[in-house]
Image (tube, rainbow, N blue to C red):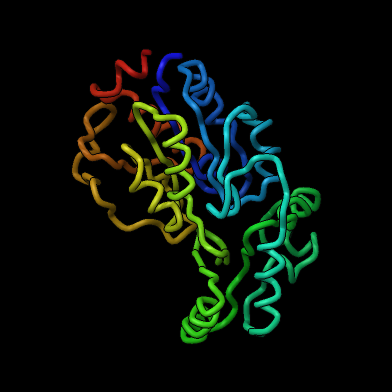
Length: 267
């Protein structure tokens, strides 16, 4: 079997999917090009396994692995919600101004996410983590995070939600898949702070522009001065000019145009 040339890890919301409409159609031609090249495209998201399975079908990635619930686990089709029930039990004892998905019904999750009620139901079918909205002060947040840490619970801020879990990151799950596939080149695409470790671990990282989120500071290996056009960037990490799926396609096109990758891309 020939070695895998490209192993690509991509966030969904605000990256491969439009932040507001969840549209992905501008990325479909590039996804088709990548699959024709034999690339494995791994969805890495805060979404649940039930949600990811649906998006894999829509995007033609049903034969690829996925990273779910903000890196809390690899999706393998099974469901075990013991970790989620433990997190919810701790939250009940803290009585903090944190509105988690478990505190909302399907309509409430649909309202804060823009999902349909059916999709919101899948988003509430959680096994490993609890996303939610912080509704207190920054001072209260510090105390909340300290209290969670006493129970072994970590918190990560994404583009929209604060997500609680017992650990596990996109980068850690990414490492396991790199060991499994041993690719020649790894690429990561993301738009939010919770994607920083994934972007740092990949051979090449693409920060997809998202004017609706907190954004990402300059990252190691990024050459902000070398954004002259396709094939001319020198940094290991580049930033797109367009947002969402259009930016996703732009970033991949610019990356594949680099002289050091053109042979692998033509593959």
